[in-house]
Amino acid sequence: MTGTHIAAPFTPADRVRRIKESPSTAAAARVRELKAAGNRIFDFTVGQPDFDTPQHIKDAATRAMHAGDTRYTSVNGTVELRAAIRERMERTSGISYPDGSITVGGGAKQVIYLAFSATLDAGDEVIIPTPYWVSYPDMVGANDGTPVVVQTKAQDRYKITPAQLREAITPRTRWLILNSPSNPTGVAYTQAELHALAAVLQEAPHVWVLSDEIYDDITFTDQPLLGLAAAAPSIRSRVLTVNGVSKSYAMTGWRLGYAVGVPALIGAINLLQSQTSTCPSSISQAGAVAALTGDQSFVAETVRAYRQRRDRALELIADVDGLNPIEPDGAFYLFVDCEGLLGRRTPQGAELTNDQEVTLYLLEEAGVAVIQGSAFGAEPFFRMSYATDLDTIEDGIAAIAAAVARLQ
Ligand code: PLP
Image 1 (tube, rainbow, N blue to C red):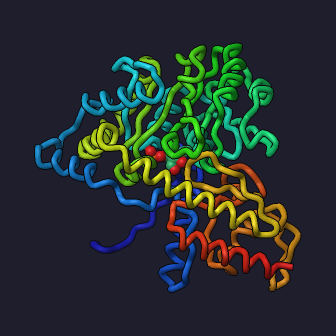
Image 2: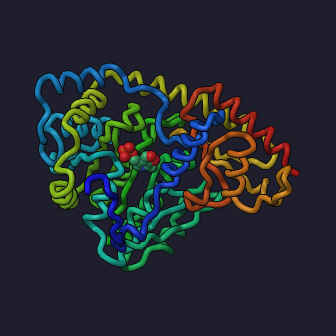
Image 3: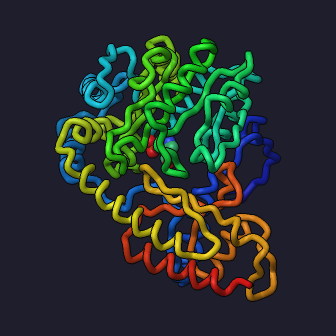
């Protein structure tokens, strides 16, 4: 009976039915399809650097392979990598963390997932300010938690305020997620804003904060940004700082992220990791050591490039009638308010009524791929990544402008 396909009834677990595919992954698949069909597409959906991983990092990984570093490592990562993370944390935050405070995983994404898995029981609440990274609510839901979405406002530059936080906290609140600089807006919390949030959290000792700082190297502010644990010592013991090498060092495919927090929490995450993946790739860990301890000029050079692209993209988008971009402090995304396009009609006579229709119109009329704001819990917006070359940014936004001009 070889080669015979046998169909069996399959029902996924409730956990799977609670989650959906990441919209950015889905959008990327659609772009690949259109490109394969021969269409020219300006792709602004990608959430990863367009640069290649620096050579010294690749070399370190190659050396590790040749040296036989090809076996399981300890669950919480190699001694060298934990030391490199400790040094990095000390350099950027001034905090000296003991060894048991650090864990590494297969990307920040996996570490965040395990952190929820390690802490959430059915009905536990997680406060997620909008616009949020698409994966947070699904990761909370997959781990039996309840996402409590807080709508932020334009006047607050789309950051949660102390009053909003106070109102969202209940006896069931387990976590607040902060992501600074943010995907998708690029806005970052100032030290004063972090202090003000910490003051609210001081009154709610049952609430912990997952501080996702994956874009902290990619900032355009005059002062370097301080992470939450450094900015708010009064709540430091309840902060889980999450970071990784994906964005800063163009290492998204290496799948290496880490978290730093109190040893009891880190221990719970390690326990779960020991029964899931055991440890992240030994080769990637060697690469991450080189990334964190080696020459940092790649980071400075790429941040200069992102800044130039941000400035150009902002300038061009702001000139399009009906579009209103949020000025980012960091990361490589532009979140664009497209309310001004709603109510207009396409050349085919269809009225644009929401950001999904705007996104579809831009794909069909302009060959421009962006992701609708509703995927990030905020409407009507779209996110465009400027982790691409200046020519693509200029030509793509010119195509957007031309398509918008054809609306009535
Ligand atoms: N956190 C945010 C806000 C992100 O945008 C991403 C990736 O897009 C991640 C975490 C996951 O990064 P990693 O590649 O380390 O899993």
